[in-house]
Image (tube, rainbow, N blue to C red):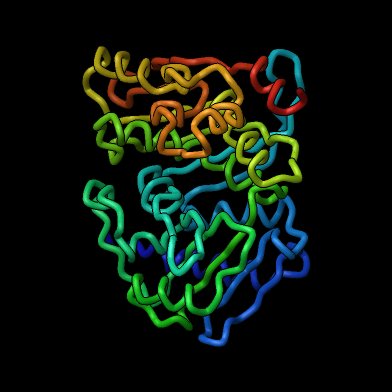
Length: 317
């Protein structure tokens, strides 16, 4: 693969930095030269910061737009994600697959810098051989990373600290809610990958997801943002597949509703698991409703449903 995910993301990050005042983000430089872009921790952030954060996270291979969503007559603010390179955009770049846990600092790291660090086995399945002179990582955290952490990340990525850009945003913000809702297609791709499907055969991704009301507490916000995807996310994937019967069987395994932990707001599930994500049934992490369309036959197969009852308890209960 000659396409450089990090070079594309760096270009978008440069544009965001140049437009920092309008986007209400704050750009600073650590003593080692690493650039930090605060999209909502101490900076105000907002919808534009969240949209750009999400698109940088996808290395510019996905587009996020805002549009209202009407579910069973109820109007909800929402976003739509589209990508023509689903495997690269969503798993190669966007997936929050690296736990940045070093010297007492912790954040879930997503973005194309992961393709340089290669701490995840999934890159062996994506045919990714990332080459770039710099790295871009997106962190879900309220605490800005210090220079020592930036040095560690740069070393893992094999780039100078001065060539590293770290964007960060906490969950309980507008931008934080946006960037998580924008993962609606990514969660479907990740479920496919976990089920052993070759995600390189997914040639188009389209997803919509409601935007939850912002909660002032990061832990509570984790519940609402996950509920937006699990109970309100809808995804349509176009795939290269020759066997319609296999596709019909596959789609039935994809929605969040197949999980034994399905049916309660995610905050309650997380509390029941003693706030250990790894104690939660991994089958839960998927959109509410998924449709697969075969390029070969043109037939579509769908499973799951939007659960307004649980969304209501989570968002407004």
